[in-house]
View 1 (cartoon, rainbow, N blue to C red):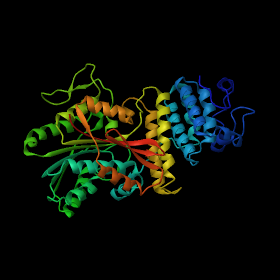
View 2: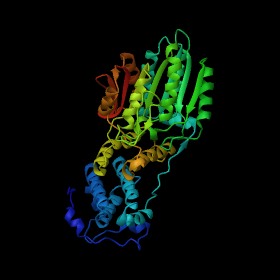
View 3: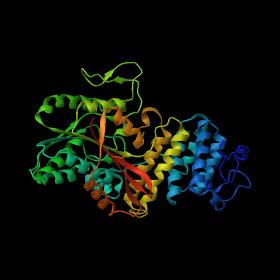
View 4: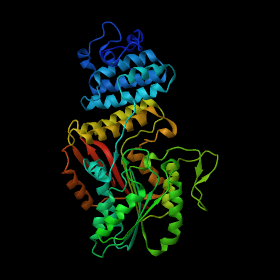
Length: 455
């Protein structure tokens, strides 16, 4: 068993747990679980990020083995060293602690932890539902999304040059927030604006950020905006969901492709932080090139992600853009997943101090969204665990296996990204890896952008 600094794990096992029923909110924070344990002030030596990670790992192992006594003792330590309003490492740890408590509440003998935590923490993560204006301002606060918008739009503009009809399939977690900027650029083309068709999956998302509009209302706003720029926009929302690999959307695109492929219509597939919600493994649908691309058969099949990308390749798009977070949160092992998430999700907590003041509403919304992600990664399993981010190298291999070929971003795109980053804190950076661009924070990979054409 792994040791954490300062307190041997065998010593923790010898300590009697404190009594839950007699504790109130203040007692939980103040009481010590065993005689002679250091006071809250004496817990400072536990407060570095590495030690917090080790404590979380110990707690996860205890919960998974239904060792309620050990889990309870470590929980006491974490409650004292990681307040939800502390520094960035403390808030990060607090989010993971809350997620572990939610997980513990679902498991056998560890249900006692939930009783303790309920007196001290709100177990439900309340995320904000944005208006269009709020969401537009929100995504502009940080390069996290703007990086993908900038790289994607530049690559799309170059790929569709000369086309009179452009069909954009926007698989985005941010409700088409990059589209107005793209329409502005398209409107200024030398050869005049084209007809733009915009297709989105029209099932409301159950993951943050959430929007207070229906897709029909969103489409109406985008159509009106395009009209103000003298661009004709046709908007369509196809009822489809990530849970089945956007099967009905693929089916509709295949039918359209047969009709419009010979007419010289450019087909753009824009995937912005959405594909990692597709389950990475399944035993349900198999691709069928003769009819619907998803035919359900009770046999061992490739993952929905693999099938989805192969179906996209069959559409022969003019260009496909894939932007996502550069991490690996897919492990079936809780501790492995916890370590990967902890060593990636420190970044949004570290960056927030550079652009949002303490106590602001936007900061509350921002951190609530991170907490939601942490809880989904740690507390849930099966179909409920939708945050299954994969690394850039894994997605690159998936795209190549689907017979796509990577294309480089041009110098002009790189220049645009650098100009955008100049508007933000100095810790943000850009690096090129082969054909791809990667957004970094203090040298650590954050988000990648890749562009692909049929191979």
